[in-house]
Length: 197
Image (cartoon, rainbow, N blue to C red):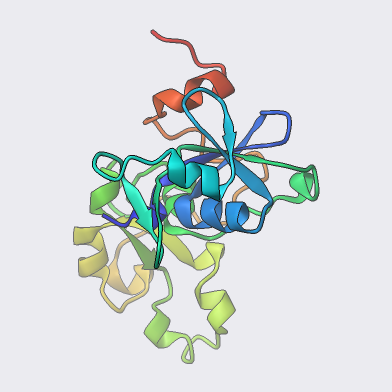
């Protein structure tokens, strides 16, 4: 399990749910003093107090050279700086979210652990297609794929493999923040106004 790809809810300064990010991005924001970690009692923590809040025996941990931190589930930005300009980064999790966890070739809904990312134009053929590294690794050239379809398509384009895409990949619209994912963590429900059913 890649702990740095775990999903974290990101709130703005006023506790409004902005987006879902991965743990790597969450810790980058906390380390840069741009965000604080929210605990299960809705108390804010900086890194030092969060380390004290961590149970090294039972918690899922992110380790540094000299400390271990419990994996947070919610962070909160501490200023409004550039919040409206938040960029949805191209990550595995965000591609899966954009594609609704559906293989874009066979149209099957797959659990996250069995999903892969496929480059529509294979990376090894970027010179042939006159694409830059940025273009080959862009929202417009990556899709969610199951392991079988990714292996079957191999080093071919969808046309060459006879595997048409479910939809043309594109950068997500600003409103798409990953909240459509079915597994909402209990700690997120207050912020997302989701009650118990």
